[in-house]
Image (cartoon, rainbow, N blue to C red; front, side, top):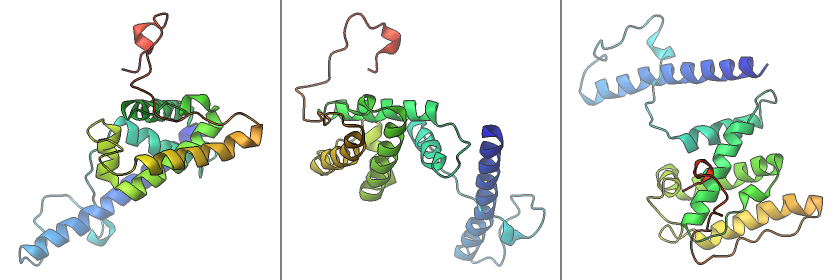
Length: 191
């Protein structure tokens, strides 16, 4: 069932991208003063059924999309993408002088809290700034989002943790990146 849901989702995404091709090509033709686009594509069917959007993405964004979509498609197993996204989020927090907290949550709570936090992050910072932040090219402080991010994570996670009676998360700033114990093999180090 997971394979079927993923295939259906992928087909839908391809159809949406194909529809965008026509719109982009028509817009370019109009800007160039042409009546119709250059014949750079082989089109079967009506041009109005095509659309195209080229976008570059990274591992974090792919993992996040699967996690976000798993809420709507019950058959999608988001455990591996969720683990990858949690690692990215915790690494970003550590790089910004915050104590990583997502690893403290169970799988379901990490998925739900992560979905909420990342959606807010993209909404407030925009896609480009959020991607730069996750890639380590930007910081929460420079983006003016540090205090809001801490409040966001604390509030989203506290709702989840209070449900099971766990203690609150310690997200306060740390002096620097958390040291990795020497007993942990290099293959498991996040840095």
